[in-house]
Each structure stands twice: as C-alpha cells, then as structure tokens.
Image 1: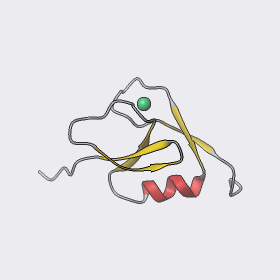
Image 2 (image 1 turned 135 degrees about the horizontal axis):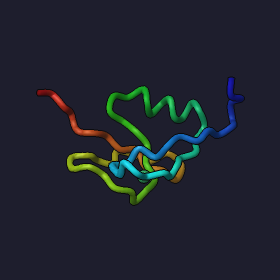
Image 3 (image 1 turned 90 degrees about the vertical axis):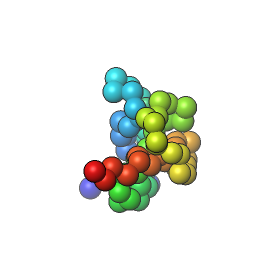
Length: 71
Ligand SMILES: [Zn+2]
C-alpha cells in the first residue's frame, strides 16, 4: 500500500511513443483520472493525437481524452 499523500510516478501517456517523461501524482488522483474511460495524464505541451482534447488539469499536468473509437 502506498500511503495517502505520497506521490507516485506514472509514465506520460502522450502521443509520442518514445516519451520518457513521467507525471507524479497522488494515487487517488491518478485513479480518479483512470476511472474515466479514455482519460489519461500527460505533461503539458506534449504531443497529442488528432482528436484528443485536453479536458482538465491535475496539478501541473493535463488530463486528455482520447476520441471515441466506435467502429
Ligand atoms: Zn509525453
């Protein structure tokens, strides 16, 4: 268990497959983002795929939503 209040590093999930940056947030914050379908965290200013929108922010990071993929 990670004590509440501690931050954890997650990889930046921007569109650059070789991006090695990380975001550092509290576990419950990350879970709140991950709980929403197609939402993820990136470092501000990082590459976004076409159709991806910034829908909010978390600390100094951006919350991005991937476009719906309904074929
Ligand atoms: Zn990135």
